[in-house]
Image (cartoon, rainbow, N blue to C red; front, top):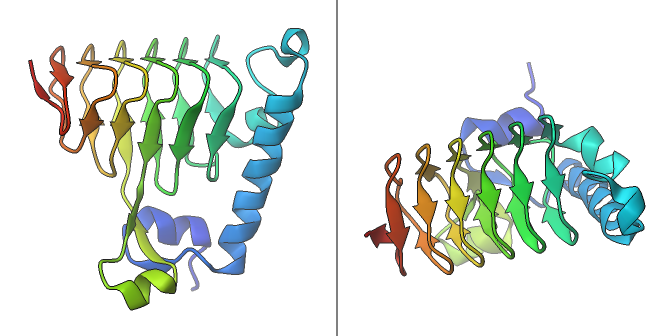
Length: 181
């Protein structure tokens, strides 16, 4: 039985992101993000209807514009999550953001891990690695979370940090690469 493109992404196996099925999924996400960005602020509410169709939203979430996601279908926001302006979520794998998490402006979350071989990279070969952000986490503006990391409950990631390893619950990290304070 053939697996769906979404199942292949979730498997962690190498696949070509240039396949037409992935492009159609990205096209739907681009339409949703565009709708979100171009709505009147007072009409936007927590997010645009097309974003709400893709993203699994908890109660009382707020996504400021502009916002970008690759697929949206792999993004889950817990209750009370706040994404400030300019957040980017490249959700080729599951991205779970826990309740009451706060993401500052320009936070980026990346799931795609591109192949090391340049020939395979040109062919769009990548794999997807999940990212998890625990409840009550605060991620400062401009921070970047790399593929496969988990941020523990109550942790704080300083503005501008690049997180390449898991962050322990209730800890604080800063720097490039991010290290415990």
